[in-house]
Length: 241
Image (cartoon, rainbow, N blue to C red):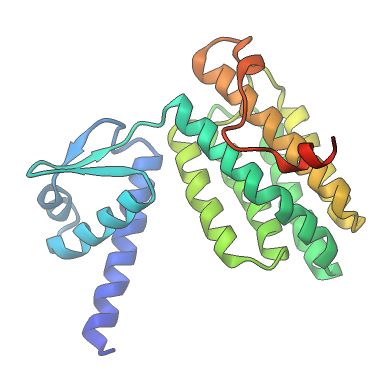
């Protein structure tokens, strides 16, 4: 690979980060349509790295190309949130189980720091959803890394991005901030105690309760959570009878 290819890849990666953040922050509004040329002109760069960045964002479900028109910023629906949390249950419950088995003292120390960031964020009661979700995402990503899977950490990054687009936090509607923080502490305590079963249950309970609360928040119906079901089987519940 020559230096020009390296520079090109580096630029495409940088553009991807810029456009991704603009979508998450709402600077590129859900439902809006943007041409490759328009974004390239704003960033004062060629169209090729912009197109590559948008194609990657299309793969991640954040934009959709429309023939001869450009890229549409996708809106996150209630169904999308149901799917996001269903996938998180499938992936993060076994991840927590494995993390509890693998965690070293250094891992637990880093996870404790991540937990403290979560607790601090949820104490602020900030109206900025991203201020809550970013430390929340780092906590869950840390568990994925402790479990030994960088790929899972990358998948979670994408799922949290889509949650941020929808302002998808369960706080402030059917759940209090302290309650969400306590969920994370239960997960941490189980991993620190190297109790895989307790870690898996704590993670499953946290994700299911949060998903139902977010659906209720998005629909504006505090009773909607009772009707929500995961899109895929919850194997932990099935195994527990």
